Amino acid sequence: MIQETIVTTQNKAGKTHIAPMGIHVTGDEFIILPFRPSVTLENILETQTAVINYTDDVRVFAGCVTGRKQWPLKKAKKIEGNFLENTLTHCEVKLTHLDDDPMRPKLFCRAVHQVNHSAFKGFNRAQFSILEAAILLSRIDRLSPAKINTELEYLHIGFNKTAGAKEREAWDWVTQAIEQKLREMQRL
Image (cartoon, rainbow, N blue to C red; front, side):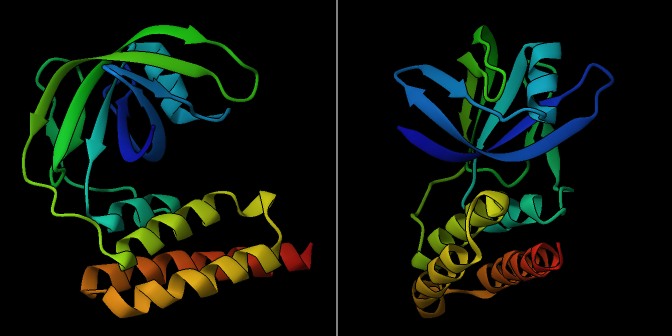
């Protein structure tokens, strides 16, 4: 199963990196699969740790893919690192082994500490639409403009019916970034 999360990592100098990432969960094992090059990959290899954050604030996902990576953090308990202040649950993990790959290595991790901070009350269709739009933005160089526009049109239907203020803010960030990237790609 793949879960859409925010992964926070820290380098040895103590600088935290925040990145949205679909992680694979198999029992009590977590597999993080960052593409190369990746700050997340570098940090995990350097420190052997990460924090997996489960949040329903889709602004964090949208913010990270549009350059808004400053989110309030709290100190992790069992590893050197930080978790999102507004996360519903965070899971501190340690790297157990690596299956190296030139494009997308697999980082196998085990939980060392997990805390439920708040109940998950479910995603509405707008939140789902924003997650999917953020994924489109992260893959914009691998998809055709027609495919991106078709997907956005469909996602906008559910978004329009269920969005609140936070979701509208996140949607604007992502769709403006997609429009900008598509314009830049047309000029090439």
